[in-house]
Image (tube, rainbow, N blue to C red):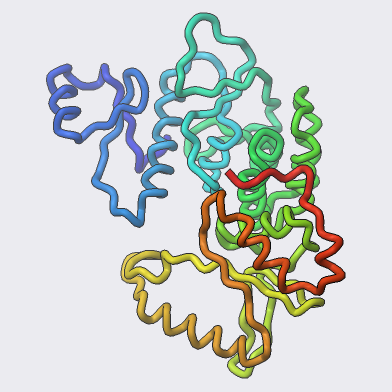
Length: 316
């Protein structure tokens, strides 16, 4: 079981103790009859807090489900410790039967079977294997979300051929073309979900596949950009603002020192004649600006051939 996310069932506490703890804000309701202790989150740790809550939801469901079940899809990705574009709002579980009567709104049940070879124990919970998880997510999720998971899984050593084989195990065929695209374009060089997002936008715009962590040799040594197209001397970086806040990356993180290091790094890169495109997070209404900023760096004859990829919708 998940030791750092204790789940408390209603029957384990006297009713007046439970009610008092809930009124004081010391317990958060996960689902009917299941609670967890809560702490006041710091702003920069909201994502980690959401991930912990989702893990606790899975732990609570495991204790309350009587029939055989395996956690799957983005819940399995979460339990494997993979990056996610967004934390799942419901807990995904595979079961071999269709539930009769009213179903719990916080559970997404997938009617199927999971063979023993596709099951593992992860933090004390039954979970689909890493390769099966990647395949399920690539098939069922938005391709950007699937790509974020596949990138990180590849960095963790997943075998993409095993993922492709897992696509053929389930009876479901919807989403297979997109899933194959996700697996074909997974890249272990992405260091964050936002770097995957930037690469996804480039590929969606029809640009050639970039190199991740592209090296640039400067007078101060070799530096790396998130994306690079060396044949055209085009490079791009996602510039996350979190690293420019004290404590934004980790406790004790010094934003002033980070800013100085970034300036020295970019000055050295620009001295070579390369001026990377720097991109920050934008909403759906400004995605076109990012695409135009990237494509504008390429020669006109290439730009004339660019077409938006028909399989890739706008990021969620």
